[in-house]
Length: 93
Image (cartoon, rainbow, N blue to C red):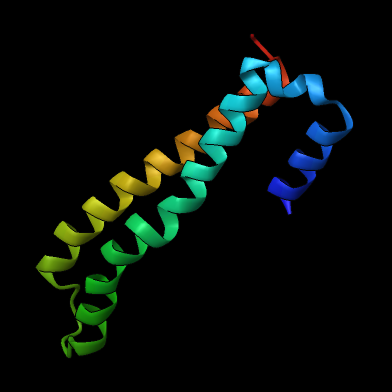
C-alpha cells in the first residue's frame, strides 16, 4: 500500500521522479521489501526448525548463535526504513 501511494504521489507530481530523496526512498523501500523473503526468511527457518524439534526446558545454545545473525539483518532492515522516514520528512536533496 505504501509503494502504491508513493507511486501515485509521483504520478500526480512527475517532477518528484527527478528529486533524489524521492528516488532514493523508493529504491530503499524496494530493497527493504526484498529483504523479507530473500534474507530474513532463510535466516529464520533454521530457528523455527530448532525450536520445533527441541524437547528441553532451557533455550538451546544454537538458538543464540542463529538469532544473533537474524537480529543483525533485522537491524539493517529497521535502519533502512528509518532512513526512508528521515528522507521523506527532511527531503535533503
